[in-house]
Length: 433
Image (cartoon, rainbow, N blue to C red; front, side, top):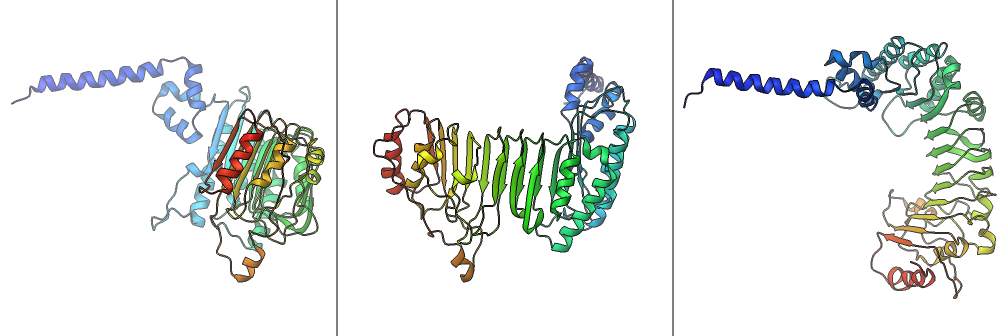
């Protein structure tokens, strides 16, 4: 059956007209709505959107929230691998510098920036990011400034020489941008070796800092890292190497997470000083027989937290049960308790001491897991003994808890010690469960 060419043309015209009408309906939206759409896009996506329509072009420079992410600058080497070569990193970093420069250069100082968030690699080319931001701050205000600084390579394991080199390069960036770092509210660092004086210098300069995340950073096993800061609200150490962390004076701190600390039978890895607003404490560690067992009453100081998250990573339990008269004052505000990756050789009866000490506790989450992250050789197996010094606790026979509403146990096998005994004991004590 023949198709009339004129009819086909009419159909094409109708489809094109419909598409234009749809585009026009979007473009005819008020500027504030279009700007709100652009605000939700990262810089490269927003720029591509604006290129498609002159209606959007003028809005790009009005965005108050600017996100520039090195991970959106994709380059593949000649072999088709997604692994970044030094050349790829240099090219990607040059792209981030140019995006930062052009964005700040075409933006009038009359239009404030509510957020500038830049993720970039710690390579020589990235010093341009620091210079651009530092220069822009000479005549304008950036309300919230974030730096997320990625390591140079992609390997998770670094040599000591690489860590030292990264630390020196970071400090050169830091010294090159005093205005930029003084304006930071968020800083995320990876794979650096710094001395404690460097850290103190960073904290004293970054006066507006609210969020600090250190991942795989080191000061040395003998170091004592002392933290004092008026505005820090969130502090995270993950896979770092310190002798001890002392949170001396942090009047605004609300969230603290410490993931993995190293052997010491003589001291705790952490001490809490003046942290009156601390509400969330997360401690995760794969403990060996060389780790000192922790009494929470000694660790917490005067902190009265509302959420406690302990992750034992399928190795030995590194806290000691304590009497309610000792822990009660510190657990008076505790409402949420997470006990992660308790190995299956350990029963759960010892956890009853939390119920006795925390009258306001509302939710308890327990994950029982027996997955080994490492295949230890014989020498290490002697150090990582799951059954070493298993905690025990005999709860009061007349224990009554009026506020516990939710008990979740995940990953356990149907076993007497989990089902019949432990759950019945909790259900009997928690009258409103």
